[in-house]
Image (cartoon, rainbow, N blue to C red; front, side):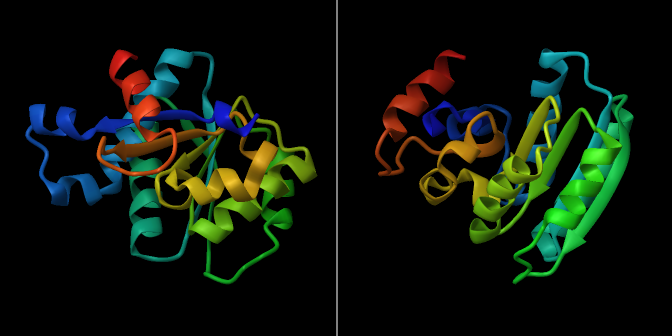
Length: 178
């Protein structure tokens, strides 16, 4: 079920080990580098499409993805931004479907993350990996709203062991062991 969401990220105490400040953790490059590390472990992926919100964080994600992934050997085949309030992502997702990327990366608002997950499934977009860079994908509301459409999403995020969400301690323990 949707509980099979895969999480990749930087644990807060690991951030202390690497001397990352709270300000560093807000930079999307932390999430993007974590995602690249995970993609390298998965092997066989070369092409990427990316869709982000058209706000400061989304623009930062777009810059980092389109800069850091090519440096790591990935080819960007699609890049789009959208304004808050867009509800129909199907035209973009259908275009990505024809481009057939190995990886599709999203950086979006909470409510948009749910719509994106559902519409990815609806249009039959099936890359090897669908990834969310933090933001809306890292919140419990994403799992609640997207339900089975969230299954298999790879989410790059920073994790804090003190959050009070159900299952948070279990996830933290699993991340520490990984």
